[in-house]
Length: 501
Image (cartoon, rainbow, N blue to C red):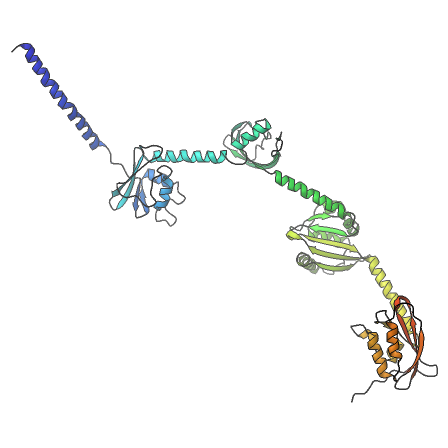
């Protein structure tokens, strides 16, 4: 056989053997790889709906839960685990998955969560990665959510380094910076020794129609500060309106002769007027220190602007009761001072637990009342000195007053009755104890008349025979004076009291 034919035959056999050897080697490598691949350890073991065991990586994932061992300590429920893993594996069912089921990651299709039987338990494992891969995805998602939340916050948040330079800021801060034309919205630096500092700050160059005032909170962070600013323009405007309102009230109250003291719900003095200083003798400087209610009354006591108590302890109890009454229903009291002055103090409750005290000097009013009472007593003693029986009736027919002679003659004391004696009641008494006469009807008509009237006289006789001269005179204000005159030769005797049958 020629040599070239032998060589060709040997070459063909060699190529055929090589063709058979390549698939066999590949199969062998695949078998060896399969035999040498480690069995994937389950991350979690479930019995029923509870996680009863977890690998080190699985325990690290469970640590993200509020209750890694479940609220009752019997293992985390599948619902909590599914909620934790669902951002990475959106296809996780509400109930534990069936054995041999698979759920792929939305971000990485190679990352697959597998369920399989593991003795009596259900094993949950992952292929194409490990627990660290899931943890990294969850961390990345949390950071993205946190960044989005901070960036979309409706108020400025930013970070500065130790030198005060802005190293990070959210969208609201950047928008304000663009409106104001500066990156340094709040240039003041926090105090170095402080860990947390809050203050009110305004923008250096506030935008037209934009926010101006902020409540700024700075929190010390690593290598710098974190800052949070809340817009408080509405609060500042409300405070300014309140100050203007209080100033308006103060100007109004400054012209009142009544002393005014208003205490807030914490019992601190918040408003007073000049009249209070005049009546109490307290200086504006003393009142400007905003004493509480009890201290205020203590200062009044020290200046003898209220009755001196005999016992200080009981006095404080009385003052506490007075303050409670003022807060609940209000009260009024009259103080007679050692100086001879008389004050009327009134307490009134106000909204939101506040209370107002008003002090009036009623010394002139009391003096006038006392003088008027003395004049009445003098007038009464004067008419009591007359022998005649005198009675005065108002234009409305009410007995205004009478003298001692009247009370003796008719055996009647109208002052002892709570209600006023009327002309009709008086004439009935007279008519019942006198002989019949038309005088009483004429007298009733005379008292009820208006306009010009002329006095007149009449004679009446009591049933006991006593003759009386009745004189009727119109007096000032439409009143009527009725006088019973006993003849000089007769003596005024009391009306006999009728005996009971």
